Length: 219
Ligand SMILES: C[S@@+](CC[C@H](N)C(=O)[O-])C[C@H]1O[C@@H](n2cnc3c(N)ncnc32)[C@H](O)[C@@H]1O
Image (cartoon, rainbow, N blue to C red):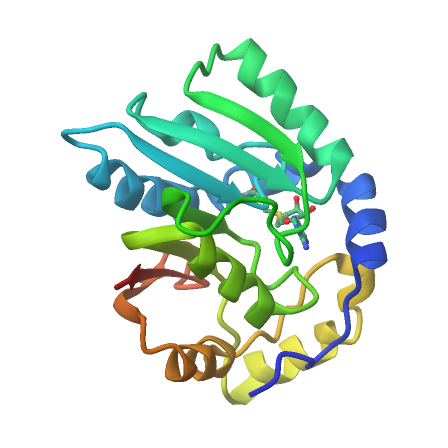
């Protein structure tokens, strides 16, 4: 499946998140915390006995940053400078010394060499980027062999009332800044093309099973 269900462009993302930035933490802290926590727990497990380098793709205002253990050395990237400005203040306020860099960058064209990070995380991002397959390809490129890619996402309903509601909301994707109807097939079809990537976990999360934790390993 191609990932062109509802169109969302870089310009849409920039406009939407410049608008969201001042109120993002107010609206999206509590309801999306279980997903961020589950993602951070998966990453922290990799850093139990050693330091690891982590790329946080679409770090936004950095709500997940305090959840990583000090052994996790984080580089965060985001397309939206207003979102990153909030993240920078958080890093300073909370003394998060394990955050190495926060950079403006496009997830679909990462400016890092191949096999550069021990792990990559992208909480609530894949439904936001214009091309999820290109973003996944980039994440797979920069993670080292043996490294993990951890995704947290809303996976759209396949049928029923929820699917209808998501399709309706999908028509407003550009204004919202995300695509509510994102089906599993987008990830499934990408996985089918990538013999070097294995799905190791797919688990529904609170609240109300709205979000899914997805763990991938690059061979
Ligand atoms: C829903 S927010 C998630 C932020 C954060 N990870 C969290 O859990 O709150 C999605 C973020 O992805 C960013 N984003 C969207 N498209 C992007 C792209 N092509 N490259 C980098 N960041 C992008 C947005 O600017 C926004 O900050």
